[in-house]
Structures are given as C-alpha cells and as structure tokens.
Image 1 (cartoon, rainbow, N blue to C red):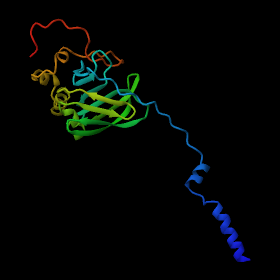
Image 2 (cartoon, helix red, strand yellow; image 1 turned 120 degrees about the vertical axis):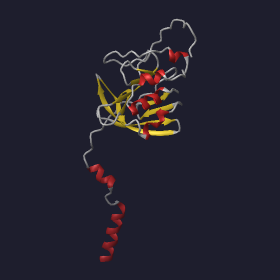
Image 3 (cartoon, helix red, strand yellow; image 1 turned 90 degrees about the vertical axis):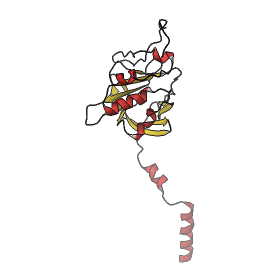
Image 4 (cartoon, one colour; image 1 turned 180 degrees about the vertical axis):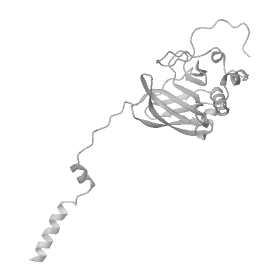
Length: 219
C-alpha cells in the first residue's frame, strides 16, 4: 500500500513542474512600463561644415543656414580645460547615453546626459581635450558621431576640430591659430563666415546667401 501511495504521489508531481522564476514573476506585481521617444533618423550632412561660432571658444557643425547638429565649446572655469560637446537632438529628461566617435584611426566614447539648454532638452557632456576618447576629432578625416536613439552624424573632413582641441588644450584663443592655417578646404568653407546664433533658438551655421565675386582667388 505504501509503495502504491508513493508511486501515485510521484506520478502527480510529474504532471506539474516545480515553481520556477517564471511562475514567481507571474505572481509579482508588474512595474509601470517606461516609454522613450521614438529613435531619431540620422540627419543629412551633405554640404555640412565646421565653422567658428560668434561666441569665443566655440565651434559649430552643420549645414549652412540650417540648425547646427553639434557644438564644441572650450570651458576654462576649472583647474584644467574641458571640451563641452553638445548634440543638438531632442533627449528624454533624465536620460544618459554614450556618444561614440569613430574616425582618424581612433574610437572614443563620451558620456552625455539629457541637459536643459534654454527651452530644449539636448545631449551634452564634457571631456578633457587631452582624453584619448576625443582623439577621433583631432584628425583631418571624416568622423562619425553616434548616440543611440539620436542617429549618426557624419562629420565631414576639416582641420578645424583638431585646431580647436589644440587651442583648448594649451589655453589659447582659436582665432590666431585659424589665421596661421594656410590651407582652405574649399571656396564654400572659406566664404561661410561666422555663424548666426539666435537666442534660445536652434543654432545656425553660416549663410547660404550668394557671396559677392572675390577680387582675387583664394590662397
């Protein structure tokens, strides 16, 4: 009889698996779902250039007379200078991410946070100009800048970011270094001039107005 009862108990147990994580999770109260904004598409960067900002110690990247895509600013308030990088793309409040830089034979990752800038919330972070994670920007070739959910920005070749990083590192203004730079990428970049930055509006880079004919060819 005991043998029959034991056999019956084992048979019943075999029909029902023991409680596991899945069963326990079904009994626990579910957390409130978290919704993030839809991922942004990668912006079009044909014709985009780097240009000095009207604000000293700051450069912008974007298509002339369209909202800037990225800004670099040298901060000298602390014991050592920092490069503040801003990706002008909408970010969810309280979010954080890694901005990946790839190019010029180097790969870097910079922590960025959703930061309120004026009336907008955009991606922003800071890093020392000597940090290896910003090395991709120091070379003259193309670089990509990617934030998950904010798309990938192709940074067209330009010597300006490298000059900017060097100026920030040694604590010198950028303008004299630009004056000593003999090479001009192309006529369009030479004629771009200073960027226009309306207060609390999207930064614009340069202008698309047709320039007056030059009296002499560019050097």
